[in-house]
Image 1: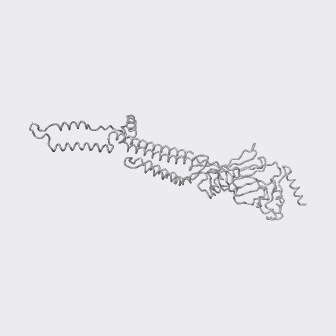
Image 2: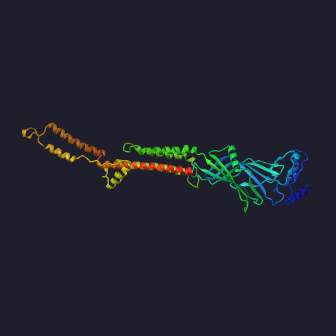
Image 3: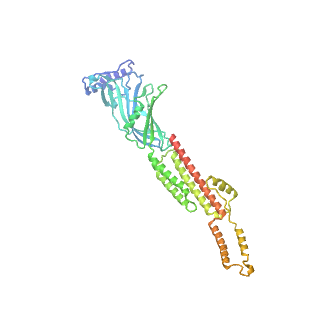
Length: 454
């Protein structure tokens, strides 16, 4: 008989006119037990939406506080956060007098009431947060549901400016069953207040910093399902990556740059540069775990590291070319005229190594003069010796020294042709050093401007 009466009451509430008032709960005593006993008929209606007219929409107000940023997976494009959510709506089935019942609020099991089926549309994994089995019911019919959520949500991560990137991720609350004409969503707290409180209560940040949380309410007109969008703006803490990646890479690049100051004719620069390239390759392999991996694009820092490695390899090839040019200068043909004009005259002045033509001493004239002197008889009229023995010895020694000097100059490659080739090598080395320096400066400035502008 009692079940039949409850069924009739439920049908009556479903088809009751819109002007009907909420059910007044009367307590026999001012305590929670009496209030709980008086609310038992309301528990039987927990399966339906708590409105006296089914055409009346249920207004659900909500907000959340961001308690922790648990992780960002660049490869899977996932953001993991821990939220504390609060939902409130009006239960038109029940009101009571706080003085008569002794309290204006009671906490009851969730399964006794209708709760909105709000979910986050970006959810990509099971919610592993602790379950809160209770909701709050107030004397005016207001209901409050507060529960935590471990949200693994999809987020379109842009890591082009890593490690100076700023990510914008969205959390969209909405219902999959109730249409916009039945359930309307609104923000229960200003978004700047949500941001301020979240920054205060934040317990876990990791390598990320919360910048801002903004909320955008969906336009209710011509909407099939009502939605409330939250946008979370995060900034990566870049200090660790600057210290462990950029500064060491800059040091190695600077050492390779100043290696151009080593004289290529006296020092084996190629061995030094090969050791430097090997060390830089090992450095990149060790630090590879710190670099993000994603299929959407290549981070700018990866381009920077590839550029540094390419510059080092290019400087090694240039050193090999210059060394080969210097060592083989004594065995090559004279410098062609176009190289002499282009490199020795034009490029030499451009890089600050002007070439001056050095004329060899007129050895042939000296030889003729020497031979003429040797044939000049001394004191011929007196019938004495044609030449003094000591003078003959000195002249003979002078001729031997000239021959020895020519042989030494040949062996050391100090002939006019070899000197020109050596000067060509020095000019090319200086020119490539300038190009190397200019290229590094432009690259660093460009990367800095791009990072700072985003």
